[in-house]
Image 1 (cartoon, helix red, strand yellow):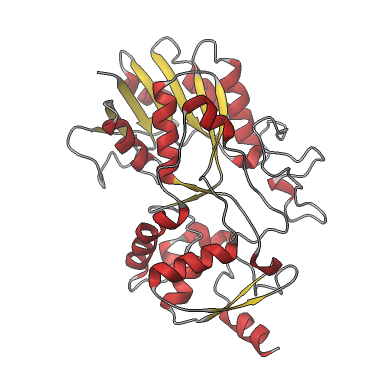
Image 2 (cartoon, rainbow, N blue to C red):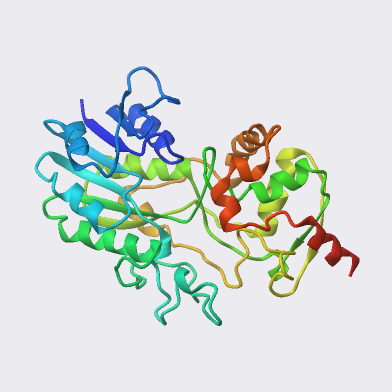
Length: 340
């Protein structure tokens, strides 16, 4: 039986990735900080506790070797070197990166979003051949670029598929963008404000679709970089309507022609230019077809968010989301905009 080690197995992408590999006949070791204490897999999955920064611990998990390593949490060049040091004991690897590595060719990227005229003007859709930021230690994007470069430089020793997801969605997310609409509906807010006419598009990536790409890449080892997104990139207005349909509510939307008015109209998808990624390479190289559409994935996400919020403050539930979007639920600003 083919053997796989999944690092970061208890996370948002790790859970469905483990399940997808098991269904495909892999014998999986699920490694995570918690050691599988909140496991969602059957008893055939071996669970181990792992500190990703401990080289010796990772080497011990790999043991005498395995056919595949899937790394959900690799972050920088040091992590890449940690993986490539295992070449000879590992058949191939699949590593999660990010679309944040892309540059628009004019020095604009995810690191310049909030600078004057700093929003990237990407082609639609963005292919994997699009330039990337320079690798380095300065930011999440530059660290992910360094991770990719180091891995691909050693691909003759360790074949690696690098996957670049977009706006990841699904249960167990530390940054659940869908909360923007779900909490408003739970709070009885039947009016909302959307900037840029509600037409913003920031390509989503279902954790289940990413898991499907992991499964396909595991069966076809190679040296490649692939976008890892859903089959469609809905507008923010379409996302809101889809959430409403799942929750059985009707809402009224005020559309702003331009950017948010303070916090009013600002959502986790609000971008002035489309951010959409080309999935044709994954389709051509791996035979990728999304296993779930955005709308089909929503009932599970909405149910998970509803349960998570029960009797709890959203900031307590999702501290990372609160840090990135502290004014996500500034209802006073929205009411003032309605009054105007």
